[in-house]
Amino acid sequence: MAAINNVTDLTVEGDIGVVTLDSPPVNALSAAVREGLKGAFEQAIADPAVKAIVLICAGKTFIAGADITEFGKAMTGPSLQDVQNTIENSPKPVVAAIHGTVLGGGLEVALVAHYRVAVPSAKAGLPEVNIGLLPGAGGTQRLPRVVGVEKALEMVTTGQHVPAKAALAMGLFDSIVEEGALRDGAIAFARVVLAEDKPLTRIRDQNAKVEAARGKPEIFSEFRAANARKFRGFLAPESNIKCIEAAVNLPFDEGLKEERRLFMELMTGSQSAAQRHVFFAERQAAKIPDVPDDTPILPVRKVGVIGAGTMGGGISMNFLNAGVPVTIIEAKPENLDRGVGVIRKNYENTAKKGRLTQDDVEKRMALLTPSMNLEDLADCDLIIEAVFELMEIKQEVFGKLDKIAKPGAILASNTSYLDIDVIAAATSRPESVIGLHFFSPANVMRLLEIVRGAKTDRSVIATAMQVGKKIGKVAVLVGNCHGFVGNRMLAQRQREAQKLILEGAMPWDVDRVLYDFGLPMGHSR
Image (cartoon, rainbow, N blue to C red; front, side):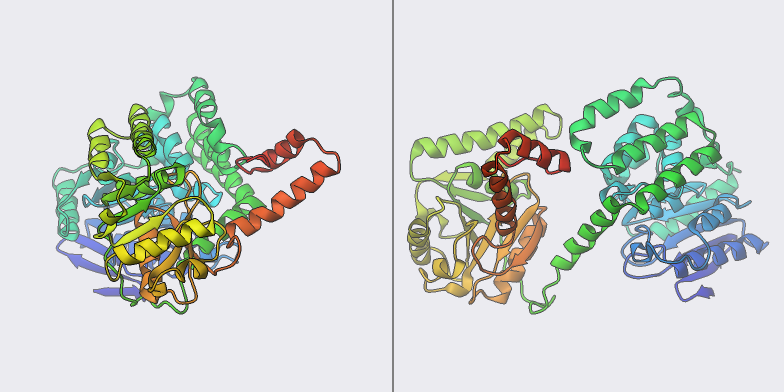
């Protein structure tokens, strides 16, 4: 074994050189990683005993992307393009061995290998659009040459993570090897490449799929029209589309220049800076100083929801989607029937769009138990109240729950404004009470405000944060005050909008300005 630097080493197994990258936590493309990769490949290429090269990563994932902590700082060490050129121009076949997530710059590195093998659990994607950017290392030029223009457009503008099986079917991966046996599988694949004298397949030279789209501008105009509402206000989706157009209409090296130009335009703009801030803020929000990572988590195997209206139904869907059984409670049979009917209709509409099968719909509905008896919540681990926003009603509900819920059950309120401590005082177990404030529609909106009371137990907080993650929310812990954080922010906007109207502005003009600024809805919500 030869250590290239503290994150990279090269071993030779027979005639296969194995370059191993180990830079926790996610093998991001830092200066040390780029330097290690370039040095390891140069050494393997120069070694006459090495006939083929495998690139593999230690830890939980292949290269997960760029090191975005370096964004905006002076470049040190070799550039990513230098590393890619070394790999792509290797006179010996290079096989990328992929596990975990191969995202962004990680996928752009894998795309300069001559072949890609992966384990079944691997996922690939170019998610730069989510931080207001585009793939800046050839991703937009190589991807359509592999998967075709239509699929590439979809991938770069959504940032979707493509599972290994689908990646294999679209040609992004060349082979899937047994889970847990990636290293041996990749070496065996490299030996087959040598034995069969397979070509050094450089994606940059594969033009058939981009040429098939040349002279068909309708591919792009139709894609823009179909996604206009979703992309409204964001610069990055359009720049990603322009890059795919460049891949179709320009020679590879010219397309790379256009990609780089558009990348730098986004990188130096305020919108991407704001989206990168949000990216880091979401991760920071998950770290709670006085609730350490080893805080015990309570099991949440069954959930109760009180109220089958818009909020209660939406909240229930989050748990049904995650495979968690839900008992939903209403006082009147017609309200219960209506609520359950709306949930089914929502799922069936999703199925009509092809995003769920009818079997999926039935599986989710089978997890839902409608009831008019609070006593049916006695075996629930988490009970969420979503009744009318009036303190007297909330206190009455929590007083009843205190007598029904099993010991250790988490009692949560979906209140958007009311004092969690006053609600908790209606029980003999304030340590088990917490706020779980979902935003409407609760099955769609990603933010989940978790409101800690003065006596809320740390295990209850830690469990609520984990539950938020399980149901796909951005869970943010907030303190107990009137309106918490989201509605306190909204109140400032509402106050100023109403002042403008009192001063003579028309409501529809206030609405239009807010909407054009980029907010999804105007003042009249």
